[in-house]
Image (cartoon, rainbow over the protein chains, first blue to last red):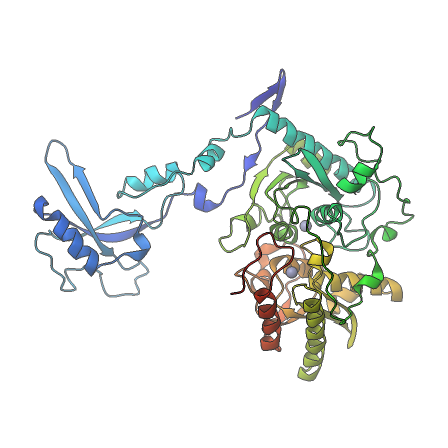
Length: 366
Length: 168
Ligand SMILES: [Zn+2]
Ligand SMILES: [Zn+2]
């Protein structure tokens, strides 16, 4: 849903890139259930059935379903056990009565479908509940994401402002023979650009994608940094604050003008402090002060093109908070070819939004 | 392809680099890159030093290799597809993605990746990258000493981590 930021200007909402676990209905499996013949026996039956058939991976399901059918009395069903999966491997039908189980007061078991795991969204919950009663804890923030109108108009303007900065960097990359990709790291708390990078993969190191460059400029702002990324269009906070105060923070292209302009692209990319890299085994450990933020913790990234798998994982390592990208890419790892950020076993999670200034970002690529 | 003696020789060097990293308070992973039977680039993890979480041993070694190519006047696009990479720990997703982008054909590593992150063994599956070539992996060379260094490190504290883990 587009929202109005200022009279006459409509900023489209960034599109959250969510996992299929969230978007698709919860898969169903077959289970055996049986009707309770005498309702007074229900609590005894629940106890007996639960101890006979513990269901540790179906804890989201209620054990009992009570249903009013028409004007008849309420009927009660008890969940017994999982039916064997339908791959046809097992000759065992799974019917508990055929396996010699008997509970006084239960009718003949029959098959029904239930949700295989808990519902994450209300929409999934409503679907699951049509089959069998299930527990649900609503994630309010996620529901707002799904509704699509979670950013205020101020936030939308700020998102656009930072993507505009990434677009500038991308333009610079394009004009210097690089891939047209730009990236900006922002501290959303103080509303400030911490680092700007653009693609440099044709300047010497094919791994210097815009995201990798931007992450290193953030490191530089914290007194670190490994690669010697110099050149117009790349900067970090420290350098910006050293430069003249007349400059607004959005116009940082000239902030690196103090540096000598590299004569060739190859010079752009030599390693910082070559000697530092020769490994000594002296064993001395330097004490490092740790005043600033840890890596990109709490920061947001704006990048004109969907990051590749290397860059997407670099952002996991860097503890980025949110990623906004413009144009999807065929080898993109945040929704197109792969969805790294929705994998269950990564050790840090970040939110991803796409289609920020989609038209401008897509035009760059052509 | 390198024989077992060669493989062990280079992995031994990688282990030395990993020990040097540990002595500097870095994650103890070391990496050696070999071109035509010659170790031409090396590196160890430098994340704490650089405050850049992407400066893994492989990234450092790749940077050295590219400099070496320039220095000796070789075209990196001819060197990379025949270079071998020795690393004490299975490359993470980022590094594995990087090595694919570079078309490095052979990765020899010591211990499996720690920390429950899917890694190199899965990365050479086609779906991850449309660019670059899948690489071959030889796993488990000196796995025990490689893993022992990491255990030693994670038993200590990571000085830059926001909430350092207590000794397990
Ligand atoms: Zn990338
Ligand atoms: Zn790595």
